[in-house]
Each structure stands twice: as structure tokens, then as C-alpha cells.
Image 1 (cartoon, rainbow, N blue to C red):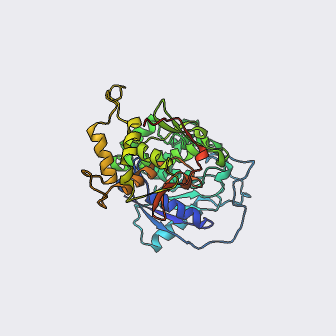
Image 2: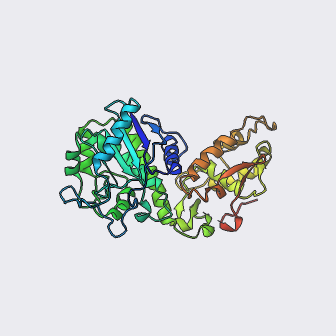
Image 3: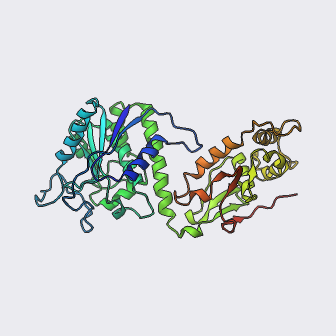
Amino acid sequence: MQVTIIQGPKVNTQVFDAIKKFLINTFESKGKRINPVLKFKFIDNQEDVEDEFEIELIEDQLRKIRFEEKVDKSNTGKDFDYFFNKGIEIRKTHSIPKDELLILLTGERNNRNFLGYIDESMANAFIYSKGWDRIYSDKIDSIFPIIYEIYCWIIRANMFDNSTDLYQSTHKENQGCAMDFCENLNHHTQKSRSSDLCETCHDLLFQNKFPEDIKKYIFESLEKVRQHILRRFIGRVDLVSIKLKYVDGTKQFIVPEFNNLILKLDPQWKVLYYFFLQHPEGIGNKDVVNYRNELYKIYKEFSVMVKGVRNKDGELKEFEIESINRLVAFDRGEIYTGKNNLSGAITSLNAVLKTVFNDHIIDDYLIKNKKGKYTISLNRDLFVDEIVIKK
């Protein structure tokens, strides 16, 4: 299945490029790429238009005008057909199949103040790209609610045969469902943070035989969007005060200012992250083999526990020792072979961290290669360490 996303008039190029990057590079929690059963095509740099009216949401009118309500003809927004016709024109110009979903991102307001809609064919949709800062915290990048709407229009286009049925099936009362009407636009934050469909809407989706692999892809992607929105929402703090804490009692890394959010890391990744937190000077790829004994000691703290009890002898199991040996390319006492899997492990670890921290502070928490040495730039005053490594 392919969906075409168009950069329409008054859409910021940086915003469009960020949306494109996100949609192309959606990852699962452990850094594995989601099977691209849903493909995106992007058409950018559409001809802009002169400013004819105020393009931001009206501050004292953060509401949608329902279809059954009379539209004030003096309203400066464009009617829906204006946006649908733009999509149809672009479809013809680029020879896009008529049954393929096309989504026009536009910075032009519509006269009903909708955040987006779709035509009767369920093939031409538009999404308003501006004004999200009036709805969401300024700590939340507008690309995330826009991406949420992109995924939701793909779902809606496959749930209904026409836009009339769609409108009649929207929830006038909010349920934390993608089909909530959100007459008060501020309520959009509620459904985007749930990233789900109610039971009734799930049934509608199944009735239309929505392919299971595409449905799974979209809901996994919506979950990632939800996490970005949620973590930015709970992380609205002074950026310089965001700490990282290791709690010895739970054997977990947490972020106190993000509502004690737990970094969900496998034991080996915990070892690796803690190791580099202890070495702000940085460690080269070829040199890490010389630190294997330190890695063994750290691993004892994160060792797999059986029925809640750590290894009786206090030593690592053979598979745990071997996991460190593979990590540093240590084999029977031989020196570095040039084939360790340190860089791959770091890539996977960083992929998890990127789902947690805000884009503008993420670099300080990643393990990065600087002048041939892997290091974490985080100010160590922000790292609260409860661990005591036994010598």
C-alpha cells in the first residue's frame, strides 16, 4: 500500500522534511526497522500563494464548525473543495492512481476550522499544518500531531466507503479514540496520547478487511508518535536539570524529571551504557577488549536473575561471559580481532534512547564516536549513581 504526502502552500520546508524523515525511518523499540508494508511517496515544493488571510487558528475560537452548523460566509478560510481540487490537480500532474490515498499538507485555513478532512471518494485528504502550538505545549514539536493525523487518515480511509459515513460515525463525546470529533480542538491532545481506536471503531476497521500487516504497522507507528508526545508532555522542565539516575534496588536507569520514566534496556545494553558513563574520557573500539574484566564486574549487577535470586556463587553464567566476549571480540586470550559487535550494540542502544529524550537534548545522552573514541557527553553531575561495584 502506498500513500502520497504533498507539501502544499504555506507548509514550512523544515517541518515537511522532518515529517518525511520520521515516516521513512520508523523503528521498533529495540532498533529493528518495522517491515515497510506501508510505503510513502513525497511531493514537495508545491507553488506557494500570497497571504490572503490570517493562517493561524483563531485563539478565542479553538473549535470546529460542524457540518450541520451554518458557516459564516465572511469567514476568511477556504472551503473543503478548494483543498480537494488541489489534490486532484496534483494527482493528475504526477499520474497518481485514483484509488491511492493522497494527503495534502497545507498551511491555509479552512472555513470550518477542521484540522483535516477527506472527500467522498476517500482518496483525497488534507491536513492543516499550522496552529498546533495553540493546542499542544510548545515543548511538543508540531510534526508529531501532524504525523498522528496522517496515520489516522490512512485508517479512516480504510474504515469507510465515503466521507458522509465517516462523519456520521465520529464520536461527538471524547473517548480517547481516533474517531473523536474534538469540537474543542484542545481535546486533540487526549486522543493522540491514547493512539487507539475504541471497540466499535475496531470492529468497523475489521469489517472493511483492512490488511492485518498494515494495521499492525500503523498501530506500532502510532505508539511511537504517542511516546514522543507523552514524553515531551511529562518532560516539560528546565532542560539543564534533566538527570539520569541508576537505582540499585530496581536495577533500572530512570529519568526523574520525566516522571521516573524507565529506560527499557536489555542487561547487556545496561552494562554498556553504565560502562561508558564511567568513562567520560572515551574508549576506542580497539581498546574496549582491555576493559573486559570491568565489564564482567558491571554485568554482575545486571545479571539475569532466576526466580528473583541472583547466581548463588556470585559469578556470571557462561552465556553472560560469552556475551561480553563477543561484545569486545575477546577469544581465548587473544587480542582484538577487528570483528567485535560494539558498534552494532551501541547503535541499538542509541535507538532506544532516541525514543525517550527530546530532540534538542538527545546528543548528550547518546554514546557517540568522537575522534575515534566512544563517549557520552552528559555532564556527570546530572548522573545519579546508586550502584556499588564489588572489586
